[in-house]
Length: 398
Image 1 (cartoon, rainbow, N blue to C red):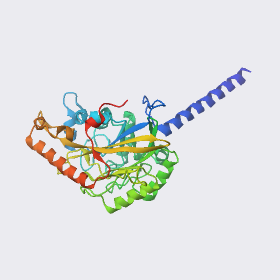
Image 2 (image 1 turned 90 degrees about the horizontal axis):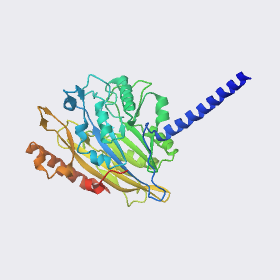
Image 3 (image 1 turned 90 degrees about the vertical axis):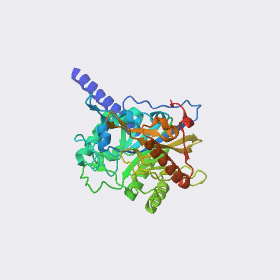
Image 4 (image 1 turned 180 degrees about the vertical axis):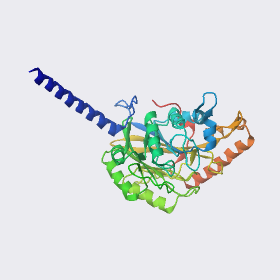
């Protein structure tokens, strides 16, 4: 009798354990919420709104690595690089960026085969960046070991990421990356045109920019009924400020198949941003072909800065629509302090009239040239996007 009771109790525990595991698994797949993260839901009588911020290339050149080294603590720290843009990031509900390095461990090196200290990713998280796109042409710089190490590092820090996976099973189960915030759900997919010719042997998976594969992934994501579907594409021609004809055709194809937002990276310079808000077919679709460099040691004209793109959406009746689209220009200031070069990402419109802030007048003039050239380019080619100022969205959203 006691054996029967014991057997029944163990069976009940097994069933309860299976139910609990299944519930957690379903919630994890649907929302991919790290431990401790609270998904905020607005009161029923409030309009559901969501602000998304997208950031360009986060690079890790040798000079950046040296600048992050603290000889006193004998450790790396990148937090200061984000000091001046952190208030903008914190004013948004969700922020994602392109991480164009591996976190493969030492030796830490920059170009041509990047491996940055994990402190770089930690600084991204500390600044308010919640998601990193990891599929780019430098993904395989340190081979499969580097890819696996990057995944492990990001997972250990609790940073959401997509684009690279341990194996096909992980790729199938973790894509699309889904978030649900303020009552609005967003699906993210990330792809790269290539890995600089470095092979990626199985079982590791790097999402490649394959037209039909992406179409199939969009269809899979659509089956989850997200309010928005975002494609992060590493594509285009380096240092070319005009998107190629192939990019335009691909963008139209992906929009037709169901993508809502396309965020581009790779050229290391800015390219146009389009939101046809008065077009009945493309009213709820927007594209930023290239956000340029967010932080790097590239100093040639137009590579020394980039943009942060902000998309505001709201639920109107039964659908979620774009209500505003804009960008903040950013520039990388690299003064020599205490005998070494440091890096600070500056919001351009907050510093363009502060010549006294800069150590060297030439730095101030270089930033002004970036601002003038960038504004000229974007004012000429953009549709629907406006330049944003910090005062436009003052304060941190709760």
